[in-house]
Length: 375
Image 1 (cartoon, rainbow, N blue to C red):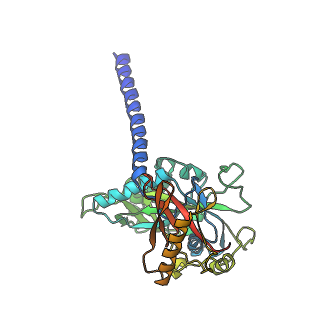
Image 2 (cartoon, helix red, strand yellow):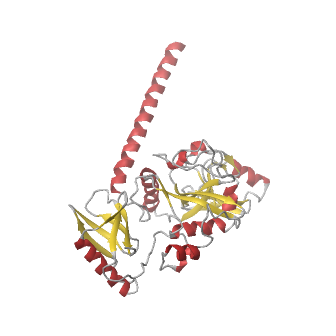
Image 3 (cartoon, one colour):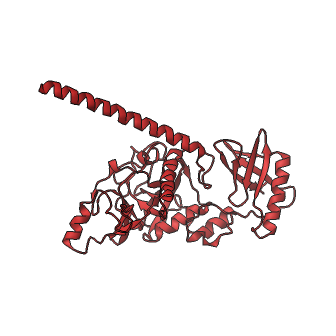
């Protein structure tokens, strides 16, 4: 009888395993379906790569530079990559919409996260969760996924690239480290002071989920506290954070070979790129805002990036330049979107972000645009 009972249990366990696998496949399928409807960030390029390098001629580079140095003044960027993972962004957006549906403020923040000995590629190449509870260890607030306000705090948990680093990132130099600047949906948070008492510290250490909000009867979304001189946030579920940027950096004296520009002003002067948003040095921009230097008539070419820069057709060129001059003439406050025909498709070009969107394609494909005055 015992053998028969064990056999029945084993059969049920196998059935449950199959159901779990089927649920995972179904989840992956739904994420793909949602991705076809989900808008991607306007900062994303048309590159098919998951990692897209952000260079010093981009305002995002300097916003990240400033945020890194807020609590690590001797840190310098070697490389910055934007993570363009459609599946992870779709899953993250699902969680954002879920908070909206239950009338909870997203409370979205940019926060730091070090992966310790785990190669960051495991996170940014994942097609389902990204930051995963499965890789989480125990901390002062229990077993969860930890994020920090201060780069100096996450520096202690940063990843050290080696010869075993994934081939989609170049080999590192001595002393370089890597960590993520992530988007986090904090939602409804509770501050738990573990230094309040020994009993409170023990309560925090035992956490596996956030405590319940007495007002709503629902669990808080996030636990927050202070440690190591930084505020930290802890989540206990997958999907509420997105690995927005991967930063490779080093500390000490600036190396001009790795960090060619010391300041944004120097980079602007050298690259002839100008921004109309003076706050970009303090706030991580959600889009690039560019003013091109006026050029003599006949010396301007509008181009889009598709495996290299390619010129628009003459009709589109004229339409874009006319719209651009009108936009600049209103001190960048007028109409900034213009539609142009290209082959069988109609595209909408945003003159603020310099991004083209295929408004007829189901995926709303986006490509970078530039106004080339160097011809």
